[in-house]
Image (cartoon, rainbow, N blue to C red; front, side, top):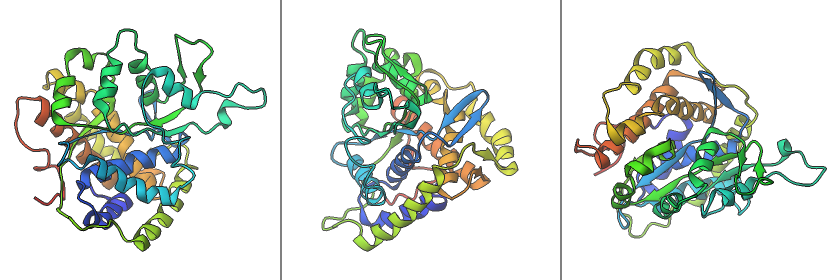
Length: 334
């Protein structure tokens, strides 16, 4: 799954952080998609899919290094895009659906067009169990608004008719512990598909670096220069296509596997959006490689990441034991 420019970046950052490289990778993918914005898209059937990747990193409080994975990606991209990593684009705290809409609501002034407003958000939820509890409150609008946001749809509030957000582009990475994840994933939580929008990513401490000061500033500057060029160019892309080889791989191997009806219960819920999700992820791989065409390596890398997410769900929720790091293409060092 460590393919192209994304994989190369993780390779350079890996020795500088105790974070799991898979968690660093998925944070980079999520943040890159948010920065790229709403213009690049692909069609899966009659559904338009933007470059929005929502990931739920799942690890123990002390050993998971969930926050380290996010801060590793954030440090690099904040140097590349300092104008993005401020309160306007990276708020924290999903208290309600109305609160989320507030960040990206249309301007009421007569001279502002909603289409010209910057509606990009990367919302890191470091205590996602709290967010899930808020969503379970009677009358909460949060689950419905989250579903609309993942789809890239216009957002509106049934409580406040005047509040609306046209063409939002919102990516949400969250952090949660395995025990919290198991406790929250009840049937009522899964209903409606709110949490199937998130890729569950198991993570743990990958290295022991008691005296680490993080990546060298020169390395960050060099990588940031490349990232700024790559994502600025990606933002100008319109529709993303699949190459013939990528299309054949998806049609003959990936789609049959991801639409297998054998899974039951919570695992089946997580698998429900796996097929379109693999194309979304492949699109971000391609855009980060300076192309508007998904090649076979992009599709295969995305497939491996989706397999990893499914293995995480099985490991934490299913009857099958095991570690998602086993056989999922991870470079993790034990």
